[in-house]
Image (tube, rainbow, N blue to C red):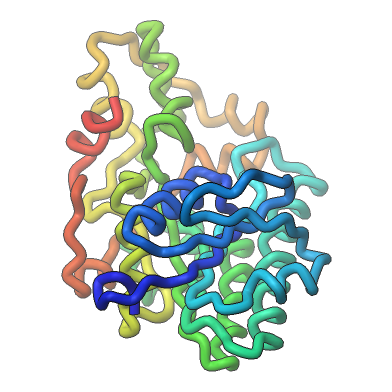
Length: 306
């Protein structure tokens, strides 16, 4: 499977216009694969990449797009980086479940089914686990995001009954120069300010975007890979260590502690789960596969993205 064995693939990607989807699409096209990218808004096709306008309600359009596809990568979902209320919680969950269920239904109806479904999840699966290291065999944690990840994975796993290999990628904080959380984290440092959220002891399980892409290619290509896969770097950092690394990279800045109580007052449970707590997530399965990180330490990752 895959160009490494001399066979170009057709790969369908949901969420292809997002940070991870666009980076993965570029890597697939660069190695000779063809990408079918699902989108809600019409886009112009480019060499090696075809955009297909689709919504989860359009079962026929999805069925047509799946024709001849070798692999499916499911990255669609509304951003969690927003204020949470009943409406936004519903959108965060349903955007993931509707797309995943539609994909599995269409795969089941396909004349020729793809061999693998690589479906996104998150390191938030483990909830606020404190200082206990979490591996792929660790139990689900507590909290809204942990529940979202659980339901999202459960929807994806139903494809296994169709003889499709399913890989559930539990992404940590993806570090990229022009997307994700990093630009927001480093912006205050350009003004000489380094905000420290809460007590700073919460874990940040991070990964460089280049390593994410390579790990997803591994999940697509290697038929032995199935089940949960933690896509994080080998060495997580506390939030205080993360801020310290940014201060070292960008020069002198004034560290300003923002009390957790103030963040909870302003942002509610989103602050409690997303900003003030985390889990020490370890990539045990990737390491067991012999995966080689380009950016295995936080210092090298941040320096590359500066």
